[in-house]
Length: 321
Image (cartoon, rainbow, N blue to C red; front, side, top):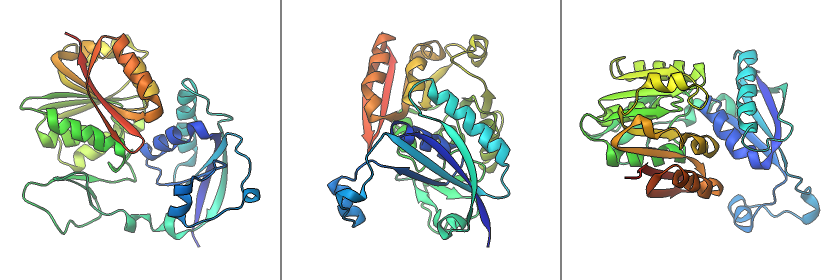
Protein backbone atom coordinates (compact mmCIF):
# COMPACT_ATOMS: atom_id res chain seq x y z
CA UNK A 1 0.00 0.00 0.00
CA UNK A 2 1.38 3.36 -1.03
CA UNK A 3 2.34 5.78 1.70
CA UNK A 4 2.11 9.55 1.74
CA UNK A 5 4.24 12.16 3.44
CA UNK A 6 2.29 14.06 6.07
CA UNK A 7 3.27 17.63 6.87
CA UNK A 8 1.78 19.11 10.04
CA UNK A 9 1.78 22.86 10.72
CA UNK A 10 1.02 24.11 14.24
CA UNK A 11 -0.70 27.47 13.99
CA UNK A 12 -3.70 29.52 15.12
CA UNK A 13 -7.34 29.45 14.06
CA UNK A 14 -6.87 33.05 12.92
CA UNK A 15 -4.24 31.97 10.40
CA UNK A 16 -5.90 28.80 9.10
CA UNK A 17 -7.69 30.38 6.12
CA UNK A 18 -4.65 32.27 4.90
CA UNK A 19 -2.24 29.35 5.31
CA UNK A 20 -4.66 26.89 3.70
CA UNK A 21 -5.11 29.26 0.78
CA UNK A 22 -1.36 29.63 0.30
CA UNK A 23 -0.91 25.83 0.49
CA UNK A 24 -3.53 25.33 -2.21
CA UNK A 25 -1.71 27.92 -4.31
CA UNK A 26 1.39 25.72 -3.96
CA UNK A 27 -0.55 22.86 -5.54
CA UNK A 28 -1.15 20.94 -2.30
CA UNK A 29 -4.59 19.39 -2.76
CA UNK A 30 -4.88 17.26 0.39
CA UNK A 31 -5.36 19.62 3.35
CA UNK A 32 -6.96 18.79 6.70
CA UNK A 33 -7.60 21.27 9.53
CA UNK A 34 -7.88 20.26 13.18
CA UNK A 35 -9.10 22.89 15.65
CA UNK A 36 -11.48 23.31 18.58
CA UNK A 37 -13.77 25.93 17.08
CA UNK A 38 -17.35 25.01 18.07
CA UNK A 39 -19.71 24.05 15.27
CA UNK A 40 -22.59 26.37 14.59
CA UNK A 41 -26.14 25.01 14.55
CA UNK A 42 -26.08 25.34 10.77
CA UNK A 43 -22.84 23.34 10.59
CA UNK A 44 -24.34 20.56 12.70
CA UNK A 45 -27.37 20.29 10.45
CA UNK A 46 -25.23 20.20 7.30
CA UNK A 47 -22.86 17.60 8.77
CA UNK A 48 -25.60 15.58 10.48
CA UNK A 49 -23.79 15.55 13.82
CA UNK A 50 -24.87 16.23 17.36
CA UNK A 51 -22.07 16.66 19.88
CA UNK A 52 -22.43 16.76 23.62
CA UNK A 53 -20.65 19.64 25.42
CA UNK A 54 -18.13 17.31 27.07
CA UNK A 55 -17.11 15.96 23.63
CA UNK A 56 -15.80 19.37 22.56
CA UNK A 57 -12.37 20.49 23.75
CA UNK A 58 -12.12 24.14 24.82
CA UNK A 59 -11.21 26.45 21.97
CA UNK A 60 -7.72 27.70 22.84
CA UNK A 61 -7.17 29.44 19.51
CA UNK A 62 -4.70 26.83 18.25
CA UNK A 63 -5.04 24.69 15.15
CA UNK A 64 -3.16 22.10 13.15
CA UNK A 65 -3.05 21.98 9.37
CA UNK A 66 -2.21 18.56 7.94
CA UNK A 67 -1.01 18.28 4.34
CA UNK A 68 -0.61 15.05 2.39
CA UNK A 69 1.91 14.86 -0.45
CA UNK A 70 3.19 12.04 -2.63
CA UNK A 71 6.14 10.12 -1.16
CA UNK A 72 8.11 10.89 -4.34
CA UNK A 73 7.71 14.66 -3.87
CA UNK A 74 10.77 16.78 -3.08
CA UNK A 75 9.91 17.04 0.61
CA UNK A 76 12.91 19.17 1.56
CA UNK A 77 12.09 21.80 -1.07
CA UNK A 78 8.40 21.77 -0.16
CA UNK A 79 9.08 22.24 3.55
CA UNK A 80 11.47 25.05 2.69
CA UNK A 81 8.77 26.78 0.60
CA UNK A 82 6.23 26.38 3.41
CA UNK A 83 8.70 27.80 5.92
CA UNK A 84 9.24 30.88 3.74
CA UNK A 85 5.49 31.30 3.34
CA UNK A 86 4.91 31.09 7.12
CA UNK A 87 7.61 33.67 7.82
CA UNK A 88 6.03 36.04 5.31
CA UNK A 89 2.57 35.63 6.84
CA UNK A 90 3.95 36.05 10.37
CA UNK A 91 4.86 39.63 9.50
CA UNK A 92 1.18 40.47 9.13
CA UNK A 93 -0.62 38.44 11.81
CA UNK A 94 -0.22 35.84 14.56
CA UNK A 95 0.50 32.38 13.12
CA UNK A 96 1.20 30.86 16.54
CA UNK A 97 4.04 28.34 16.87
CA UNK A 98 4.40 28.05 13.10
CA UNK A 99 6.29 24.79 13.54
CA UNK A 100 6.44 22.11 10.85
CA UNK A 101 6.64 18.38 11.63
CA UNK A 102 6.83 15.41 9.28
CA UNK A 103 5.29 11.96 9.28
CA UNK A 104 3.82 9.28 7.02
CA UNK A 105 0.32 8.03 6.42
CA UNK A 106 -1.06 5.05 4.55
CA UNK A 107 -2.80 5.45 1.23
CA UNK A 108 -6.23 7.05 1.57
CA UNK A 109 -8.74 6.92 -1.27
CA UNK A 110 -9.55 10.64 -1.05
CA UNK A 111 -5.86 11.43 -1.42
CA UNK A 112 -4.72 8.70 -3.78
CA UNK A 113 -7.60 9.09 -6.19
CA UNK A 114 -7.92 12.89 -6.16
CA UNK A 115 -7.43 13.14 -9.92
CA UNK A 116 -10.64 11.30 -10.68
CA UNK A 117 -12.54 13.91 -8.63
CA UNK A 118 -10.97 16.88 -10.40
CA UNK A 119 -13.05 17.20 -13.55
CA UNK A 120 -13.53 20.04 -16.01
CA UNK A 121 -15.74 22.75 -14.53
CA UNK A 122 -17.24 26.04 -15.62
CA UNK A 123 -15.66 29.02 -13.96
CA UNK A 124 -18.53 31.07 -15.34
CA UNK A 125 -20.86 31.02 -18.35
CA UNK A 126 -18.18 30.56 -20.99
CA UNK A 127 -14.89 29.80 -19.21
CA UNK A 128 -13.99 26.15 -18.58
CA UNK A 129 -11.08 24.95 -16.45
CA UNK A 130 -9.88 21.57 -17.70
CA UNK A 131 -7.28 19.24 -16.13
CA UNK A 132 -4.74 18.31 -18.78
CA UNK A 133 -5.49 14.59 -18.47
CA UNK A 134 -9.25 14.96 -18.98
CA UNK A 135 -11.19 14.86 -22.26
CA UNK A 136 -13.68 17.69 -22.64
CA UNK A 137 -16.96 16.10 -23.70
CA UNK A 138 -19.21 19.15 -23.79
CA UNK A 139 -18.13 22.50 -25.22
CA UNK A 140 -20.07 25.41 -26.65
CA UNK A 141 -18.79 27.37 -29.64
CA UNK A 142 -17.96 30.44 -27.55
CA UNK A 143 -16.35 28.57 -24.63
CA UNK A 144 -12.86 29.55 -23.49
CA UNK A 145 -10.94 26.50 -22.29
CA UNK A 146 -8.00 26.87 -19.89
CA UNK A 147 -5.91 23.76 -19.25
CA UNK A 148 -4.30 23.31 -15.84
CA UNK A 149 -2.09 20.62 -14.34
CA UNK A 150 -2.49 20.98 -10.56
CA UNK A 151 0.64 18.88 -10.07
CA UNK A 152 2.66 21.94 -11.08
CA UNK A 153 0.12 24.75 -10.74
CA UNK A 154 -0.51 27.07 -7.81
CA UNK A 155 -4.28 26.84 -7.80
CA UNK A 156 -6.86 25.47 -10.20
CA UNK A 157 -9.21 28.43 -10.53
CA UNK A 158 -11.95 26.98 -8.37
CA UNK A 159 -11.38 29.35 -5.46
CA UNK A 160 -13.88 32.16 -4.91
CA UNK A 161 -11.15 34.80 -5.13
CA UNK A 162 -10.25 33.71 -8.67
CA UNK A 163 -13.88 33.80 -9.71
CA UNK A 164 -14.27 37.31 -8.31
CA UNK A 165 -11.24 38.54 -10.27
CA UNK A 166 -12.42 36.92 -13.50
CA UNK A 167 -15.83 38.54 -13.11
CA UNK A 168 -14.16 41.96 -12.99
CA UNK A 169 -11.67 41.24 -15.76
CA UNK A 170 -14.48 40.22 -18.11
CA UNK A 171 -16.19 43.55 -17.44
CA UNK A 172 -13.17 45.74 -18.10
CA UNK A 173 -10.94 44.02 -20.68
CA UNK A 174 -11.01 45.86 -24.00
CA UNK A 175 -9.07 45.67 -27.23
CA UNK A 176 -5.35 46.29 -26.65
CA UNK A 177 -5.68 46.01 -22.84
CA UNK A 178 -2.37 45.59 -21.03
CA UNK A 179 -2.44 43.59 -17.78
CA UNK A 180 -0.08 43.42 -14.80
CA UNK A 181 -0.74 40.35 -12.61
CA UNK A 182 0.77 40.80 -9.13
CA UNK A 183 1.29 37.49 -7.32
CA UNK A 184 0.56 35.55 -10.51
CA UNK A 185 0.84 32.07 -8.94
CA UNK A 186 -0.14 29.63 -11.70
CA UNK A 187 -0.67 32.46 -14.19
CA UNK A 188 -4.33 31.54 -14.47
CA UNK A 189 -5.63 35.13 -14.33
CA UNK A 190 -3.24 36.30 -17.04
CA UNK A 191 -3.97 33.27 -19.23
CA UNK A 192 -7.72 33.82 -18.97
CA UNK A 193 -7.18 37.54 -19.54
CA UNK A 194 -5.25 36.83 -22.73
CA UNK A 195 -7.98 34.48 -23.93
CA UNK A 196 -10.49 37.26 -23.23
CA UNK A 197 -8.59 39.72 -25.42
CA UNK A 198 -5.69 41.14 -23.38
CA UNK A 199 -2.92 42.19 -25.76
CA UNK A 200 0.00 41.80 -23.35
CA UNK A 201 0.25 40.39 -19.82
CA UNK A 202 3.09 40.65 -17.31
CA UNK A 203 3.13 38.54 -14.17
CA UNK A 204 5.18 38.85 -11.00
CA UNK A 205 5.65 36.61 -7.98
CA UNK A 206 8.17 36.35 -5.17
CA UNK A 207 8.27 32.55 -5.52
CA UNK A 208 10.41 31.08 -8.33
CA UNK A 209 8.17 28.00 -8.35
CA UNK A 210 5.24 30.22 -9.26
CA UNK A 211 7.17 31.61 -12.20
CA UNK A 212 7.89 28.08 -13.42
CA UNK A 213 4.23 27.12 -12.95
CA UNK A 214 3.14 30.17 -14.93
CA UNK A 215 5.52 29.37 -17.78
CA UNK A 216 4.38 25.73 -17.87
CA UNK A 217 0.72 26.68 -17.96
CA UNK A 218 1.34 29.28 -20.65
CA UNK A 219 2.96 26.60 -22.79
CA UNK A 220 0.06 24.20 -22.18
CA UNK A 221 -2.37 26.91 -23.27
CA UNK A 222 -0.32 27.99 -26.30
CA UNK A 223 0.46 31.42 -24.85
CA UNK A 224 3.62 32.84 -26.41
CA UNK A 225 6.45 34.74 -24.68
CA UNK A 226 5.39 37.83 -26.64
CA UNK A 227 1.94 37.60 -25.02
CA UNK A 228 2.97 36.78 -21.45
CA UNK A 229 6.14 37.37 -19.44
CA UNK A 230 6.63 36.45 -15.79
CA UNK A 231 9.26 37.89 -13.46
CA UNK A 232 10.37 36.90 -9.98
CA UNK A 233 10.71 39.80 -7.58
CA UNK A 234 9.38 41.59 -4.51
CA UNK A 235 7.45 44.74 -5.35
CA UNK A 236 7.28 45.83 -1.72
CA UNK A 237 11.03 45.76 -1.17
CA UNK A 238 12.71 46.27 -4.54
CA UNK A 239 12.29 49.72 -6.08
CA UNK A 240 14.43 48.80 -9.10
CA UNK A 241 12.17 45.81 -9.78
CA UNK A 242 9.14 48.10 -9.73
CA UNK A 243 10.73 50.45 -12.25
CA UNK A 244 11.73 47.55 -14.49
CA UNK A 245 8.08 46.53 -14.84
CA UNK A 246 7.29 49.91 -16.40
CA UNK A 247 5.53 53.06 -15.26
CA UNK A 248 2.16 54.11 -16.66
CA UNK A 249 2.06 51.03 -18.88
CA UNK A 250 -0.98 49.07 -17.71
CA UNK A 251 -4.72 49.39 -18.23
CA UNK A 252 -5.37 46.89 -15.44
CA UNK A 253 -3.37 45.77 -12.43
CA UNK A 254 -4.85 42.68 -10.81
CA UNK A 255 -3.79 41.34 -7.41
CA UNK A 256 -5.35 38.15 -6.09
CA UNK A 257 -3.24 37.98 -2.92
CA UNK A 258 -3.78 38.27 0.80
CA UNK A 259 -5.32 41.43 2.21
CA UNK A 260 -2.19 42.05 4.27
CA UNK A 261 -0.18 42.25 1.05
CA UNK A 262 -2.79 44.26 -0.88
CA UNK A 263 -2.76 46.93 1.84
CA UNK A 264 0.89 47.99 1.25
CA UNK A 265 0.42 47.49 -2.51
CA UNK A 266 -2.13 50.32 -2.43
CA UNK A 267 0.75 52.68 -1.80
CA UNK A 268 2.77 51.67 -4.86
CA UNK A 269 0.26 50.57 -7.52
CA UNK A 270 -0.69 53.96 -9.01
CA UNK A 271 2.56 54.54 -10.98
CA UNK A 272 1.98 51.28 -12.90
CA UNK A 273 -1.42 52.41 -14.18
CA UNK A 274 -2.35 54.41 -17.24
CA UNK A 275 -4.46 57.52 -16.69
CA UNK A 276 -7.76 55.56 -16.67
CA UNK A 277 -6.25 52.34 -15.28
CA UNK A 278 -7.97 50.03 -12.82
CA UNK A 279 -6.73 48.17 -9.73
CA UNK A 280 -8.66 44.89 -9.34
CA UNK A 281 -8.07 43.06 -6.06
CA UNK A 282 -9.24 39.91 -4.33
CA UNK A 283 -7.92 37.34 -1.85
CA UNK A 284 -9.44 39.59 0.82
CA UNK A 285 -11.12 37.71 3.68
CA UNK A 286 -14.23 39.62 4.76
CA UNK A 287 -12.78 40.46 8.18
CA UNK A 288 -10.08 42.49 6.38
CA UNK A 289 -12.41 44.36 4.03
CA UNK A 290 -12.47 47.59 6.02
CA UNK A 291 -8.67 47.58 6.37
CA UNK A 292 -8.23 47.34 2.60
CA UNK A 293 -10.84 50.06 1.95
CA UNK A 294 -9.06 52.31 4.43
CA UNK A 295 -5.68 51.69 2.75
CA UNK A 296 -7.15 52.56 -0.64
CA UNK A 297 -8.60 55.79 0.71
CA UNK A 298 -5.31 56.70 2.39
CA UNK A 299 -3.50 56.24 -0.92
CA UNK A 300 -5.87 58.30 -3.04
CA UNK A 301 -7.58 55.33 -4.68
CA UNK A 302 -11.27 55.72 -5.50
CA UNK A 303 -13.30 52.54 -4.89
CA UNK A 304 -15.57 51.81 -7.85
CA UNK A 305 -17.04 48.44 -6.95
CA UNK A 306 -17.06 45.85 -4.16
CA UNK A 307 -18.18 42.26 -4.70
CA UNK A 308 -18.54 39.36 -2.26
CA UNK A 309 -18.54 35.59 -2.66
CA UNK A 310 -18.92 33.56 0.52
CA UNK A 311 -16.24 34.89 2.92
CA UNK A 312 -14.18 36.60 0.22
CA UNK A 313 -14.14 40.13 -1.13
CA UNK A 314 -13.06 41.78 -4.38
CA UNK A 315 -12.50 45.54 -4.57
CA UNK A 316 -12.00 47.43 -7.83
CA UNK A 317 -10.51 50.92 -7.65
CA UNK A 318 -8.72 53.59 -9.67
CA UNK A 319 -6.48 56.55 -8.84
CA UNK A 320 -8.62 59.47 -7.71
CA UNK A 321 -8.89 62.15 -10.38
